[in-house]
Image (cartoon, rainbow, N blue to C red):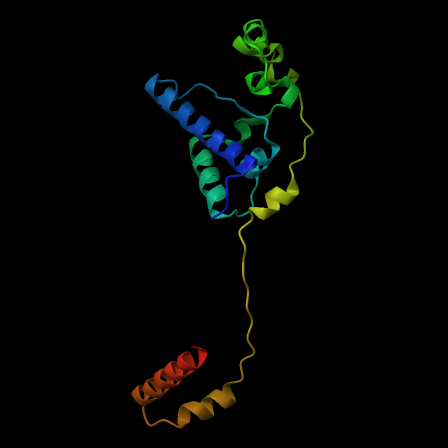
Length: 175
């Protein structure tokens, strides 16, 4: 089992945000209102908007987020513009009381066309570590040698019995 990395926790936060949005929208009968989701995690947004097949933890969170939200409603907010990060940066109470944290950023009050554009690229080492691994094996098949083996037995039952005994014998050799 993999440990919970920071990008995984950020994806989990996106999942919780999507659930919370769905719950509030449903309870307050606001299903038809547009919703916008912000994250400062480029990795989480790449997973949400990407088309690759992810490992189970990421796949399950992304599947839930996509079932509750629209991927076009997810945006990246650069860290310095993220008012929600202010308390986590170690500010004191006076600074927090006088900050933009209570009302949000000024740019959020403008039309979406004027919102900041982010050119952040995700950490592809982390992204690629969450891709689902696919194993492909190939075997060269020569029917003639196996056909000789099958023809040695008078019935299918006898073939199965002998094969089972050979398998048991090989298992005892490995011990």
